Amino acid sequence: MALNDTTPEHVKEIILRFLEGSATEEDITILFRWLKEDERNREYFDEVNTTFHASVTLNRFTQQKTDDAWLELSGKTNSEKTKIRTLNPFGRPTYKHAFRIAASICFIVVAWFLLSEVLSKTVPQQVTLVKNSIGNNTRILLPDSSVVLLNTNSTLEYPSEFGIASREVILKGEAFFDVKKGSKPFVVKTESIRIQVKGTRFNVQAYKSDQTVKTTLEEGKVELQVSGGEEVYTLKPGDQAILNTNLNKVTLKKVDPSNFTAWKEEKLVFDNTPLKDIISKLENRFHVTLSLDTAIAKRERLTMTIERESLEEILDLIVLSSNLRVKKENDKIILFE
Amino acid sequence: MSIDADDIELVRSLKQGDPRSLELLFRRLYPRLCAYAQKFLHDENDSREIVQELFFTIWKHRDRLDENQSLQSYLFTSVKNKCLNLLEMKKNRSKQAEMLWFLYVQQSADNNNSYHALLAKDLERDFSSALENLPKECRKIFELSRFEGLQYKEIAAQLDISIKTVETQMSRALSKLRLQLREHMTILILIAFMN
Image (cartoon, rainbow over the protein chains, first blue to last red):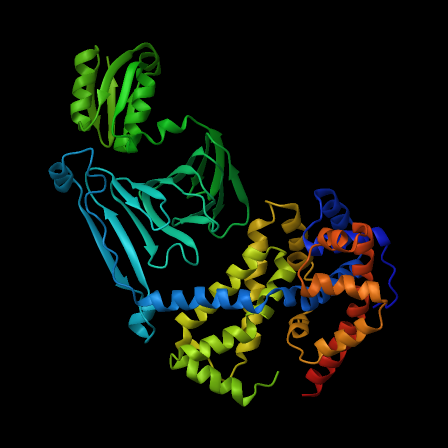
């Protein structure tokens, strides 16, 4: 340990600015390079860093800040006992016949105590589970005003303290997220990936039966990490990250996001649209595979509006307005001439 | 590290769900844990959030606490681990995080006892006497930063001097304190060995 201080003056000044939080990008580049040079440099920096925080920073966490932080914490520990959250079973009552929704949306709100609570004596921590098993989409308004549209056969889970310490949800299946900007990052976890955002609109498809998990970004920015992996993938609008769960490999590609969020739209309007575009939106909306000769797909154009029709009804409509016929083979639906 | 009787008592009442013991612990350690997190993160919001969350977890799982282990060391170690995890997450997003990640995750540049600097009761006294030996102007600048929480440019404006002068003087004061701290840590480590 060299006691005499050989650190160049300009580096010292940069360190000072860095400690205060006023270092520029260029400062950081120079400092970083200097830190890489020698272990003694790192040792010096760490000592100054510790000294600064033990003297200056420590004093800046004043009584007032501690009081405020304590109030926030005690609020949280007290609200641990809050009641079970109930959700309005008619997600968006204004635009549809409530009766039809009631019949087609079946969802259960369950709040249960964590296993740890059953095993121990801790005060219950509660979880809200929204399950959408059949029929139409379910709209969930989270405590932070973010909106989640939950597709068929999907569940969304979040803790009762959502929004207080963190904003974290667990998704099985598919959902579209319209995340409100907040100071805390919004995190979506699925079995195989972790997505972190600030405020954006994106879609996640993570059905257990599929071998892929697709994250499609409509607006803003998201960061994605594969569980257990280190690499962070940053998505820009129009990007889609596809994780192959067998190979544990992520590929990024450019897509038209509307082809992957068609399931959430109340109404799909096709105006002289190429059949291939219609097909991809239908595949997404009904989570099926439709196959069609590419030549026909490009050639045929159709005009129609889809609202609550079933897939069968829509296929009938296509058959009626074109020269195509339909057959089913296993899970695949084939359109042919 | 030895655990004193007070701490054992504190952990006991925490386990029994006494909210006053949580408050006591919180008030005692909040500023120090935040300052410690700041050392790794240099992001006040993140630091505060990590410390808040940690206390919340402690309370939630208070039944799992062990009165025979130092809660204090546990808290500091947890804060550090959480900070390093966060740097891992953020390293591709900002140059600053990347640098801190390089320093503290990859090179493990942190002395494992460094948090003791935030706990040492007599360090404050040593700091004060070290500062007394500094020229008046230098001391004044440092204290404005330290006690008033002023930024360099605010200090420069208030004293009608250049930012560069503020930086130079701050640097001088910190070098002094750094030597003080180093001496302190050496003694701490010696004591730890003797115990």
